[in-house]
Image 1 (tube, rainbow, N blue to C red):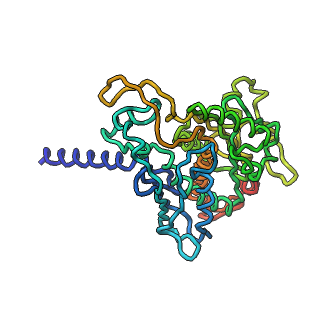
Image 2 (tube, rainbow, N blue to C red):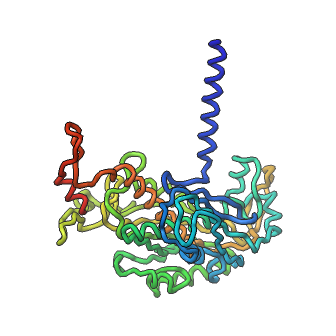
Length: 414
């Protein structure tokens, strides 16, 4: 009997462990506002299921499509010429223009696959691509278009991010603006330009998505120069999130900047993340780096500088959240390189297919989307845990009554 019980317990533990592994296979993101993306680059389509979206949110297909149009291929000579309209279909979760609170399923069908371009890559590994590591993990992979490792997977993220942006804007007029900060050594100095002077119109006025027209021209020239040689380049995308409420995020393991870092580094081709002063902050002393507090005219607690990047102790402080994500040069290039076959034999490979000479212009909406997803999920967690009772009230355990909380009242207005 004891032996049988031991066996049953072992089976239960094993099943529980396998279930946890199944639930954590890397295709879902978020805790309350949760997304699960699906599809391969050359499959029938790609998409996302969004679960946990608040009900009664006005949402039109145009809200989603306009973000997908910023990400889609074929926008300019700086992006892949793959001809995809990326028209989104809403399969569930929205009725009469409002969200139902039930799962929202979104699908974008693939139209312009050229799988024959990848025949040679079925036997040869592309340098710095995910071909070899997918084989190492799964023992099988979708070869055409890179499968799940293709940037087409990000369609689901951008679509879900569009919904998150809508909810954040309705809640506190949150605005998330992204742009290309640098291409190789050509850098746009956003601080000198003035963070508050940057507008979406400036960003969308050129094909590289840099707010400064003269810097944008230099970036475009550099990419064109590299593109003509069959090569690729990388750079940095910078994000500003305005009007983010103070108090969202959690200490220790779920710090807001840690969640943002994970989200941004999960994007294809991303290689680095920094927030606020980032690595440059290591060159300053504590006195020079600290953000001094003051109270503004309305009594709101502010900081005179923003080297913290809008987050302190893992929690938003109400200032602009400013972060940067570094993207490597596109892996698949039109120049011959040394590699090996799946059997390990030395060979060479010249990349075929249609690929971006620089991922940055299309990476901008992708990073914006991931930031929006993190902020909304953190906001909903904050409301679930900390907003059950008014901030200006205490719950008195002795009398089971609610009394005034002067400090909480002041913080609630911050």
